[in-house]
Amino acid sequence: MTSLQELIAELHTLDRELARFEEQYGLLSETFFAWYQSGEEPENPDWVRDFALWAGTYQLRLRRQEKYRRLVAEVVARRDVPTLIRESLPVGAAG
Image 1 (tube, rainbow, N blue to C red):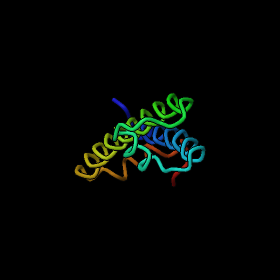
Image 2: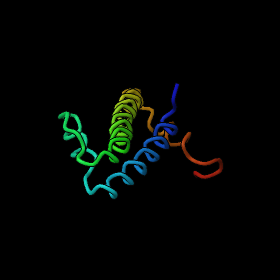
Image 3: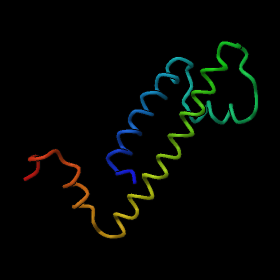
């Protein structure tokens, strides 16, 4: 089972990867993905590989974000947020 901390770290990594594509191509991932799903082909054949990686990274980001939301909802339903926070702090950090 993936912990919330692992999911957060993975989401941050995916965000950095998506930001690289967004800066390179001048579009936010959400806009790019809507266009990509429409089935249009990139005008430059050199973009095909990047676009496939970008779309895959974005889809993975969406799946991980949904998993994070489900896990957080479970924690909140148990009213166990303080325990989650304590477990997330570095050893010896909280008072």
